[in-house]
Amino acid sequence: MPYCENCGKEIKITSKFCGRCGSPVNIDAQPAVDSSPEHVVAAPQPAPTQANSEPVLGVLVLRKQKSLGRYDTFSGVLTGQRIIFAQMTGDMIKTAVKQAREEAKSEGKGFFGQWADQLKASASFAQRYYSMEPSTVLSETQGNFAVQNGYVNEVKLKLKDTGNQNNLREFEIEFKSSSGKYKFRMDENNDYVKVLKQVYGDRVKTPRGYFSKGGLRFSIG
Image (cartoon, rainbow, N blue to C red; front, side):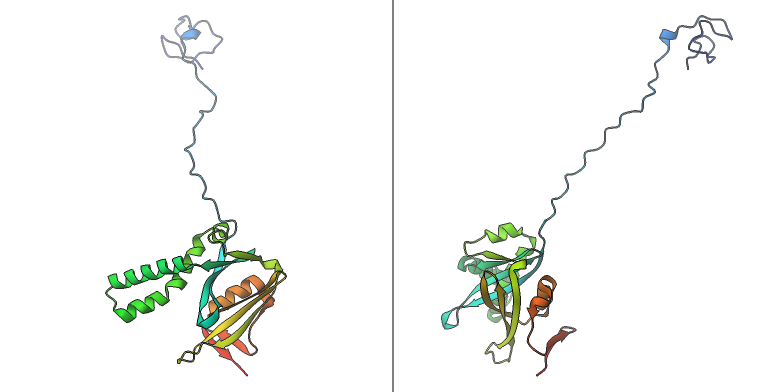
């Protein structure tokens, strides 16, 4: 609504003279008021982080036995779609052992402390697969391969003696699938059993009478 320039009275836009002071009204001199809502430019939103479409549910440290007590080390990378068998090559093992040895030295550990840390290197090295895309894991080395979860008919676990003087045991694990059978050794680890059952359900066959509770493992019979 315009106002009289002389006395300030509010006047109609069609009026030619002010009803209070009689001054002529100059409509063109009135400032135009934009009744349309102000256009507010929104602050740019950060690009959403691309979620991993195939999250890693668990990583098994596996050993494939060879002759004369030797073995190849694999990581069983479990997702909701498949298991990827990722081989740890000699160069990878050397890198992991070297890193573990240097870290142990920097912490002031002696020979036995360094040796123990080197033995743990392969297990800790495998943890990096949790933050990697499964497709990247599969293509990391030529020896890597995958089996779709739907093609796995049975995952059979057997307890085996390690031959260690501490009477330690380990699992022999066999994946039976439509594409073949794959047999490895792995530590007797309750977390491994849990993630296998999470992925494969009743297809996981544990030793007869074997069960675990509160981190303790029992075998009856």
